[in-house]
Image 1 (tube, rainbow, N blue to C red):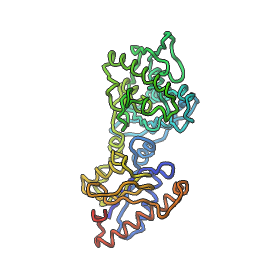
Image 2 (cartoon, rainbow, N blue to C red; image 1 turned 45 degrees about the horizontal axis):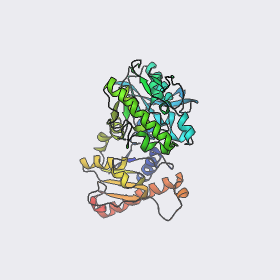
Image 3 (cartoon, rainbow, N blue to C red; image 1 turned 90 degrees about the vertical axis):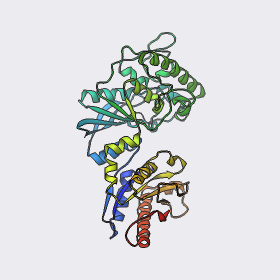
Image 4 (tube, rainbow, N blue to C red; image 1 turned 60 degrees about the horizontal axis):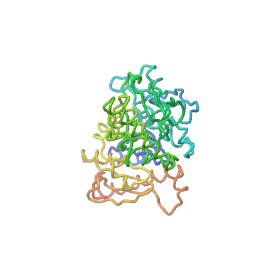
Length: 385
């Protein structure tokens, strides 16, 4: 039996690479398991850089820039070759992640996407032929204006003062885009968020509160974003009011679209880069999972997306998780969904990495042994739902 293992990270506990390794080591002890293939997996959010590096053996570069508060940092950038091109992959959260700040009204005022602009410009200068940017986990709410300013855009407040630092969107009343220098390399945005730039479902009304914004700041940000969008629609024919994904990362998706970036679904982009589907075809059974499998998992999160892809080739899929709040049924693409918890346990104890890895490995091994005994021929069928 050939087993493909592609477990997403259990956030705050263990990475995709660690979980895959622990499960593979345990399964490789079973006589009826011929081989295991480990694929670090992500959907364009946290862990995407590690996933792609693990499969493509790229090189991690440390490139000087600034974080969302203006502090000098070295951002991690993955350099790799694909499609015959030298490409770079950036996790925007590494430069301006929400975990880098304590969300408050003050950090909303100060946080800027300028550092990502500096990073893209440096990647251009180093001769890369394509850049991929993931948007998950951002702590900025500036609509990407800091990024756009680095590429030549000018922003004025209501008194016609040129805005320079911090969250420009809080005061921006006008945008001058004729001075924008468009990047000379293709930019692909790995993004599974469909929110538009502004409005009831936009970047600011939906996501800014969790980043520390007050009700008044949210109103300002949304109103100013709508006003600037009118100029962008008129000058560039880009409608940020309807563009899916423009609201990702505090509006950064919209700013990158203004610079000519193309949006792509994160999971689709990652799996194509690492040839996940080609490797899936040769497997007999797939093991996947994530920290929590719940209703949200049914809307394109990694385990469900893997199971849907495996269904195309009639490959049974076992899903494991730390927390399970849905049941498997006939319409599910999974052969089984199993929690790794073996007894009542506190959340801090359950999140311990050693506990997670041990429980995950032992659970998967037990599932395979039971399935092998029942099926007689080493196959795992849908009777184990």
